[in-house]
Length: 460
Image (cartoon, rainbow, N blue to C red; front, top):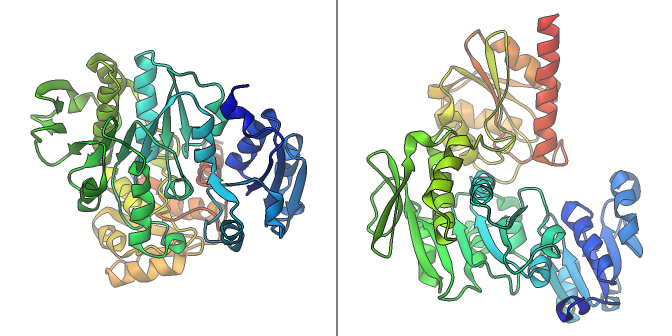
């Protein structure tokens, strides 16, 4: 055990939040001989099997409440789903107890270099595509973070040559201290998570933290087409590399004559034709630009990028084909957790579409989404906390073909009933899943199961 790891030996560490990252952090800290307490506001009954999963790594549990004696702990590790604004964090600061997140813990334990990818939309696809390019180039790497695999779970396995390709949410970036990615990218910024961040300024500041510890030896990949993103360059010490869908750049990554081009340090390189990209949509061309920028800055040859663009099929729950039933094509876009993401999904549809939307209210406005409905969507089936809010926005935009249902089974049945042969049926909620599901993955899997039920019934 090296000196950096010995710092946790026999330390009393409190982990706040018993989800994927919390349990992964507990597992690693236990290996490092720390004394681990896990706390969660949910009771053991509500947490169910998670308690059994975490039990081998915890010396103690405090469930259904938060601990009062903060001085008992040497370090507090926050799960990203738990807001940093809670009283426990404030009390810890007053008592000079350090509070970090799982990403910060992973960084402190990891010998490898980090690549950080954030943005409101597209970060999962971009992270997965970047990982596939690294795989094609035979580069030692792990794909971790908000994509579903906690970074800390691979931190001890990384060597000095390992690249940690990391999807980062604003929630994860809120709790960093020393975390420094060698390459950091912000794809775009649009309103999201305002129920937690309260203002756009706070949300942007959380995203911008990805750059705060970088130096002039590092790289920042920025969207030249997004004023909120490009404005971040003023506060960045790293070398900035821009990407653009809309214009040719003297230096950066862009599209020209239907080809992906990289121009850096006076060297201009064609990576691939735009038609080589297997996944459709303008938003995926943007994701590809970011992945190519990261790969190029990591020293990967154009051939590996080109071959990956031709074979990469996208990520599950992001405009993913599910099935064709009675000439209706079903798509699962459960990853569409905000209005801008759903707008991208709508734009990718090439058939008349019945859309299923709604979920937990994150404080988003649905006005722009509603304005796109009359042109693209023939009927809207709504469920969850936001169903009335989305209906009201749709009616203001002159769209009145909305149907409110109680659950996913009813939503899929209603969408099928409203559709005609040749139509698409799209799940793209434009909202978080937490009012009805533990995560967007569970929501997408339930949608797929409901589609399967219709398929079985139709075939029999």
